[in-house]
Image (cartoon, rainbow, N blue to C red; front, side, top):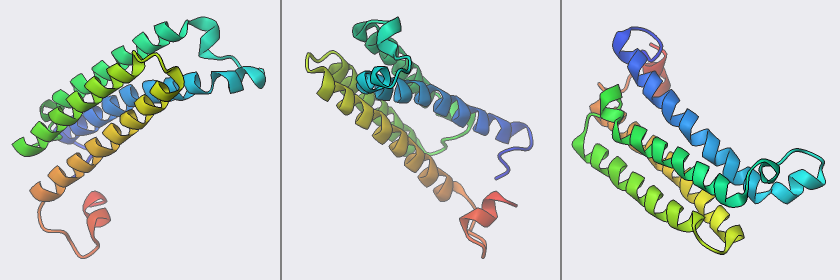
Length: 153
């Protein structure tokens, strides 16, 4: 599995890079919004100065929706080959969208930010685990050096 070389593996790394790019923005913004008072006490700029909390929540929701859409399209990047893994990814995406959007619209802002942050990170972890399972199930036999030897071949 040569991730950096060739035509087909280039799409795999591109799909994963897009997923992580879309994940990191709401991850950081949820963290920054939760700790905005600490940023201001330290004299650092915070999101509260630029946008209202509701506006930031709307922007975060759009980024999360975009990330879920990329997850739906992972078979197009040749990252998912098993139908069961793809269905689990779709289920995880709906779990993220439903729970995060409800949490972000909640009136209890401190708790809702922490819930959305946890859900977002659990989602990213579950996507990585499912992609790993798909790769392990569809790979050839594991060489003597283990999984790392397969990557570095």
